[in-house]
Amino acid sequence: MPTPITRIGVLTGGGDCPGLNAVIRAVVKDAASHGIQTIGIEDGFLGLIENRVRPLTPADVSGILLQGGTILGSSNKANPRKFACGLLPDGTPKIEDRTDACMDVIRSHGLQALVVIGGDGTMSCADTFVKRGVRCIGVPKTIDNDIYGTDLTFGFSTAVQIATDAIDRVRTTAASHHRVMVVEVMGRNAGWIALHAGIASGSDIILIPEIPFSVDHVCEHIRKRASEGKKYSIVCAAEGAKMAGGSAFVERVVATSPDPIRLGGIGKALSGMIEEKIGVESRYVVLGHVQRGGTPVALDRVLATQFGDHAMELLKFGSGEAKDMDAERGSRLVVWKDAKLGDIALTEASNKQRLVPLDQPLLAAARSVGTSFAEG
Ligand code: F6P
Image (cartoon, rainbow, N blue to C red; front, side, top):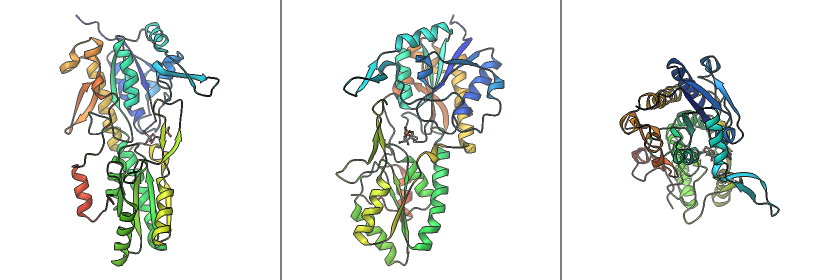
């Protein structure tokens, strides 16, 4: 007879995104209605490392459904197995394994399971605790929509809407001044945001990491449009897009982060190259963290609530494979697959990324309306 769950921990790890609070709310409310106490862990795994936790009651999560960010705080630099705690004399980070300290915190607060809301990095961290016998239920968040095993992550739809609205606004200036506007959107090494926002905004050229581009082909498309009387062009460029034979533009390296590369710079570089090659006045806009901010769109609120509810269903009753309370088999990642909720083994998703496949139907849809990917 499995021990009933009476006390769980919840944390949000990695970069923030709209909908995190909606998941926390769903988990806490559902848990409370079944007599389960939720302990909020602050700043992702950093809160476990530093023993910073607080109880969460339904009153604490009342009204947070539409709030952006996370009431618990987050960190994308706190991998307990490889925790960067200061610098060595040569300036490189001093790395220590803090798994044991985290296990002490989990035991001392009587946490029987963790709900881990995060991206691939957070799921890899959770794996460490699964291997130490802690049952973890993962909830996939990220604006990038690149988590393996799920067709959709919450936060993505909001980011796409923000990027689309921004491109719509930039179009006015492009048209009035007969310019090229390059809009750089986020997404890491995946082109999902650029593809969706590019199509939604009717961008003329979409550049994604999965399809290396040629600057000559970008310029050719702009010229072709000009020859048809279209005096301006919009380029929606994913931050991870790269020229054929080249590598992605890197904005900075965060040495203490498990995923140290921060992409950025394609907007500036490309608009400069367009001006130089064909003499058309070009400007760039980097949307950056604006895409992660503010209130989630309705779809993200709904998805986040469903994800939180499914996470609790798995903990309370289990479903399919998850019926087993053993940590390895009972640790699942909640997913949205083939238009319905489901769950897969947590281990299946860690250290993998879901990129845009080259046969993704959206690519054909974009091409059918004359959009160019400027393939190199
Ligand atoms: O993963 C979400 C994301 O916003 C990416 O799109 C972007 O590359 C990265 O995080 C930026 O990270 P940071 O907030 O550390 O600058």
